[in-house]
Length: 174
Image (cartoon, rainbow, N blue to C red; front, side):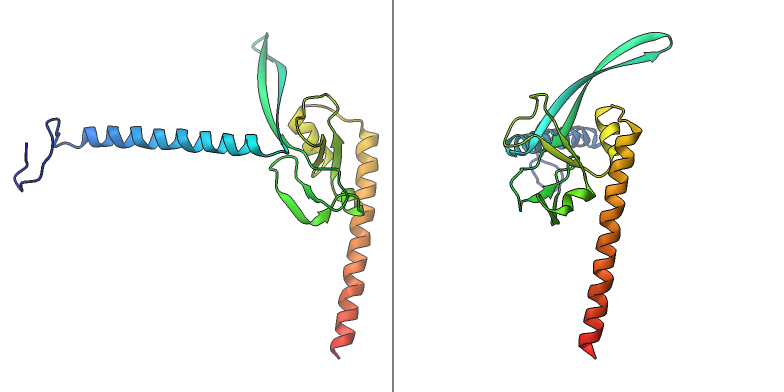
């Protein structure tokens, strides 16, 4: 079957375009499935990637509802000198290294439940609150206060170093 211009259009041709959009939507959904599968496979091959499962109980309208939630986290190697890896997104922080005072900038957690597969069970969160929110736990306030004191001391030390370095560069330029 051909159209008025002589182009082959097949037997199931529709002039209103409805079938075209259906096949386009089907193709887009298939491509999204393929992308999700590839991403899942890439994560599975990452030695620091871990998927933990937690069951949470919530009360909704007087009923207790249990929900199983998957939490994706990334661990970091304990080898000194390796780049620190963010527990949430898995991003490597190239300016921060394991085994140095750089660790004071992050909230370091060792997951000793046996759920972490791979080379390590050490995770670096940005703050204690980020850890609490991610794993739905509550930390003692004293522990958080100690971490913030250590974090602020490290930040102040780094600011002083940067100031001294800026003065040294300004003097050498003259």
